[in-house]
Length: 205
Image 1 (cartoon, rainbow, N blue to C red):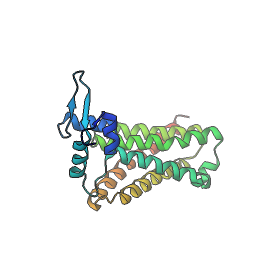
Image 2 (image 1 turned 180 degrees about the vertical axis):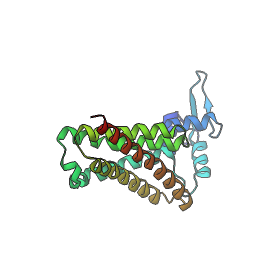
Image 3 (image 1 turned 90 degrees about the vertical axis):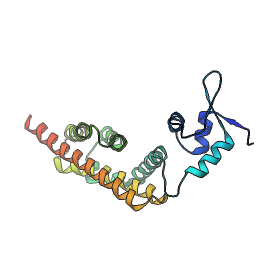
Image 4 (image 1 turned 135 degrees about the vertical axis):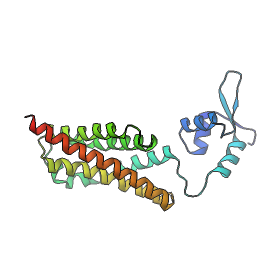
């Protein structure tokens, strides 16, 4: 068993991370790796197990796993009927409701991009998402109050999901506070963009 060779994807499964993360660690020299004559990465199971034991610290959460867990939690919360209780959601037809259910995805990916790039191009990213929420609300004849309520619903759902994942992973409070500070800064910029766009769309009528 100690001499067993693993492929990159197998090593990723053992470590519980995305294959791209294993590739990145290997390129940086952080993870013990070997290459075949054909240039393919191979890993010794014993080395991978030892590396995992010595490098995984309590309270550490790997980004890809965090993303997967948050997405799963968001989907669960949305599917539990919370949307149906929202007054703005009740005003929409089925096509509009389907479009709004996709809203959490664009918000989540925008936020993760913002976090991963440490705020690079944050202004344009926030503007684009705000524009998307405003134009969708405008297209389905929601007023600006309902447009904001829709956005806040998805923001709250997303942040609650991140809190749940962080709590279950025992992430230190200092790291948690920093993350939430960045999340609120970015999503506040989205909200401002939403209001500015909604006003501009109504003015141009």
